[in-house]
Length: 317
Image 1: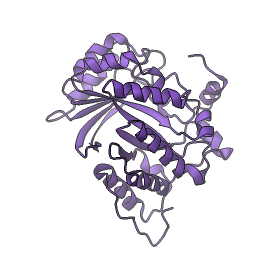
Image 2: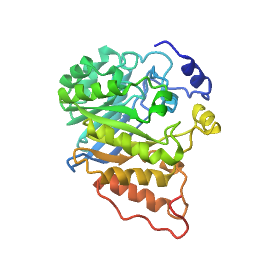
Image 3: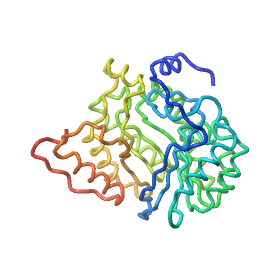
Image 4: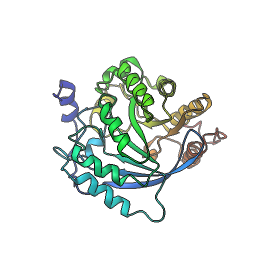
């Protein structure tokens, strides 16, 4: 993909990139996760090291954990096999292969490695990989047929705010997202969607509203899982936009409000969750921060509204 002026600006503002070993995964995470039917799965996420995503989104910080150049052949199966050996006891229900990019980008996931990756996924009833909507197609269906379990694709929708969506440098039209969602549904493949809280160019006082609208948009198009992700700073571009008052770091109270509204919306076929990765970075009252985070964890795992946290020192910050 040819670099645009926006690509060049965003990349120029980045800090130093840590050296990444393509033969070693960045880490793993074993967690409990609620599905739309109420079942709680044990999900094992492997954070893979591989080629950087060709889409230079303004908000992204995942480039830090990618390699320079294409992923070497054999590297991903090595990372996956090593990570699976670290598991104790019976295999979890689901494995998530998150490569900080697009699973169907052949610079990131060499085609010759796909059969071995599919074989390594055999013990799991669910397999999740991430992809930009633009790389969804026949290769997606081919991979779904190669694995023993059911495939789920995690796609970033980010926001449907018309100005923000055009400025994110994601190169994603809503029509393309809609088409990819229909394609997955027609082929029996599940859809997980990432939605941003605090998307740049969305006014702070409208942030929760547009997060909820975007989450409901995804649910209406068949998403079985929708994750609300607070935008993180630290990539240079977010700091530039913050200085221009085009970005306000999201607050914990906003994440609470967005999840409350999504859970109350009545989309029975969709599980809405708040992404609590780096949640401690969100601005919040020190007195009630831990209580509010625990409330979000309970809503994530139960899907049920929880009593609001009360704090005499704040209004939720």
